[in-house]
Image (cartoon, rainbow, N blue to C red; front, side, top):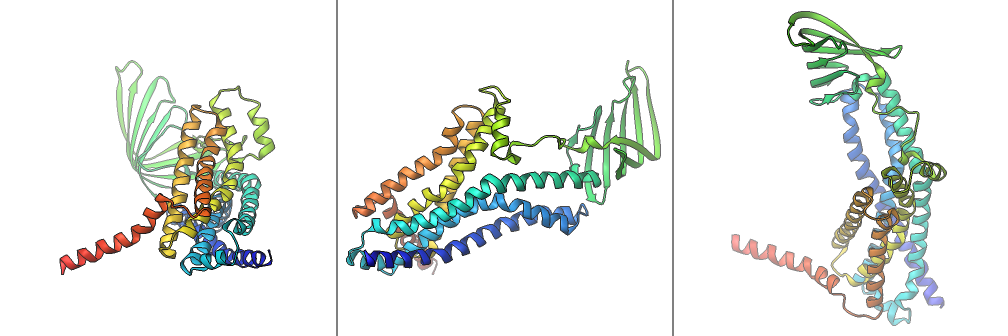
Length: 393
C-alpha cells in the first residue's frame, strides 16, 4: 500500500508539467489563428489594438473549454508513455502494484481538469460570448463599414440592395452598385466608382458616392432616366447594419438559469428548443470529456512504445475523432433527428466504452489489435522511407 502511494504521487507530479505545457501550447495555437483573423480589423478597418485585445480575452473561455480536455488527454498519455518506454511500467508491476492502482492519480488530474472546464463552460463561456457580441455591436455602431463585406449583396436596409466590390478600409468603398426601391413610383439603380461612409449621427449613416450614374425606371416601365453625378449622398438607417439588436441574448450567451427560462418559452419539438437543450447539455458533456479522454489515454500510454512524438500524434488523432463525432452530433441534433441528450453525450458514451474495453484488456495483459497495429505503423513508415531512399540512390 505504501509503495502504491509513493508511485501514485510520483505519477501525479509526472502528469502536471505536460498538462500545463499542453494547455499553453494548444491555447496559443488557437489564439494565433484568432489573431490572424482579427488582424484585418486593425489593418483594413482601423480598429484599435485595445479592442482586439479585449476580443481575444473574451474568446479565451471558448478556447479553454476545448483545450483543457486536450491537455488532459495528452498529459496522461505522455506520462504513461514515458513509463512504458523506460520499462517503468514493468518494474511497477514487478513491485506488486497493479495497473488499477494507478487510476487514482489519473482520476485526480481528470477531476481538476473537469472542475476547471466546468467553471469555464457554465460561467466563463456565457460571459465571454456576451461581452464579445456587445463589443462587436458597439464598434459596429462607431465604424459602420465593419458590417459591410466585399462582393456580397447586402439587403439589411429596407428597400435597398448594396454591392461593394472592394473595401480597402477607413470607410472607403470601391465600385459600388445600389438598387434603391425606397420610392415605390420609381426604382433607381446607382453605380459609382468610389464611396465613403461617415460615422453614424442620430441613428443615421451617410454614404457619399463619387463619379457615378443614376438610372431611374418608372413603375410602369415606360419612362427611364439617366443622370451623372460627381457626388451623391444617401442617408441610411444605422440599425440596418446590425445583424441583430442587442435587446436579447443568443443561447450561447446565456447562463444555466437563463437557458432554462428561455427553453420554457418554446414549444416541445421546435428547433429553438432543440438548440437551447443542446447548449444546456454541452455545458456538462464537454467538461466530462476530461474523464473519458484520460481513461483512453492510460491504456494508450502503457501499450504504445513508439516514442513521445508518435504519442502526441495519436493523442491529436483521438481528440480529432472526438471533435468530429461531437460536430456531427450537433449538426444532426439541430434537425431534431434524436433528443439533444443523445447527441451531446454520444461521443462520451462511445469513447468511454472504448476506454473501459481497452483498460480491461491492458489490465489482463491481453492484446489490443488496434493499438498493436498503430504501434507498428512508425516502423513501417521508416522502412518505407529507407526503401525509397535506397531506390533513389
